[in-house]
Image (tube, rainbow, N blue to C red):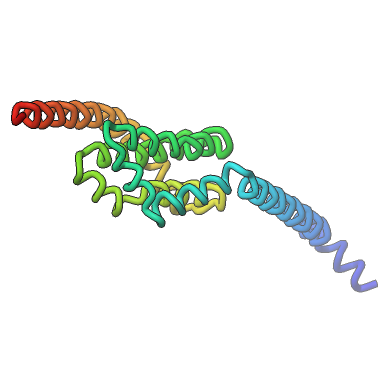
Length: 194
């Protein structure tokens, strides 16, 4: 009886703990459901064939140095192939993760790799140390795993990344023009020797 009087007094004072407990339990259940859905989506994203392809691409291109080896193919063909191999990263960040800032960061890393690779001879050395495929995989995985540090870093840099992409496109044009000009001069010089 004392318990019912206490509950009545608490209720009169607006201290209905049973109702608060029910609300708290409902909120906890809703949060748990949200976490489980997010985990299921994360697992689904990481089990996609395109994600597995990106993992293998990063492994072979950067860890086994296939990127600098492909870059040795003359006439810009190697750098073009290397860029095409990076397309799944752009697709995944744009169409699966659906993040424009992430896509900009991925494109930026690819363009840096293209620009460095376009420099004759020295570019292949830079390709050994610049691991754009591994970097892009880390960014994408960070987004999938909801890594707040990576997400905040990419989102804060989104505008400047877009600006740098435009500048990099121009620089790539300049470097390729310079490489073609240099190649033409060297070829003319070699032909003039005979």
